[in-house]
Image (cartoon, rainbow, N blue to C red; front, top):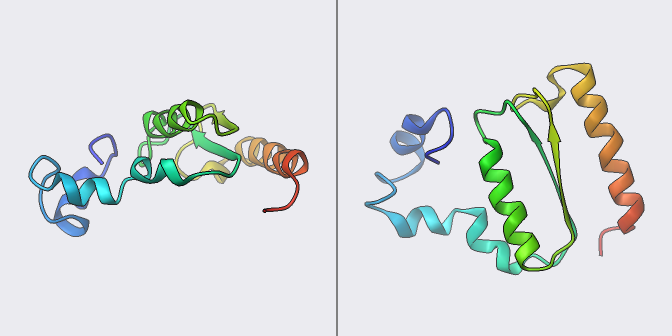
Length: 109
């Protein structure tokens, strides 16, 4: 929450106060708090210039999956903002990775 570009919006509209005053509320909504439940191979696609969900968020989740020995890959789209499909080259990068991932892992189990 504190690495995103709209952090004041979060504290005013989505959360009951500041993270250090309501840590349990924030933790309960954090993807990292649920990473222990993940069993499915996971692909993370993130834009390098994403200020809404910065790279550091994807990197943390990726590292947590690696620590759990869950097959994972982090696709880093250079220069891409939050809307990865903003530029044709970014959309092509996404389109190149997703079908290949599903080919490698078959249908959802």
